[in-house]
Image (cartoon, rainbow, N blue to C red; front, side):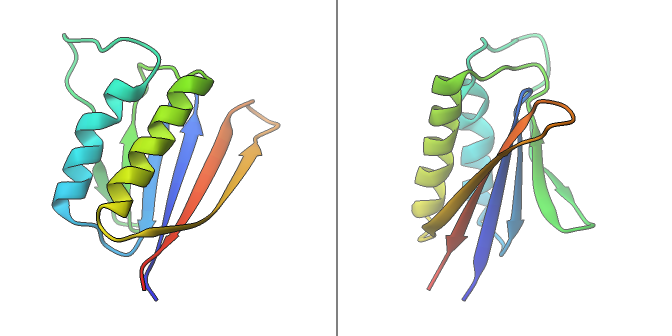
Length: 115
């Protein structure tokens, strides 16, 4: 059974997608929609945030370093991720959230599977 794990760390928002491969259309859709889901406004003078494929360990990484997300922005990001992956027939199996005591950031993990 293929698995996919999505890590969302805040603030600033960072998204990592690990596990089975995703379609290029899904990565492109997330790349377009996630920056608009943040609480801060878009900076039109800076280049657009893009997913980068990292080889070790293999995963997709998106850093939205110029943005901030309050609780509403986080919920919109979570919904965007869930909708995009469900469109590719991934099913959400579980979630986990932790607060890092050393830097005050929090990470939410989403665990998806495909039958």
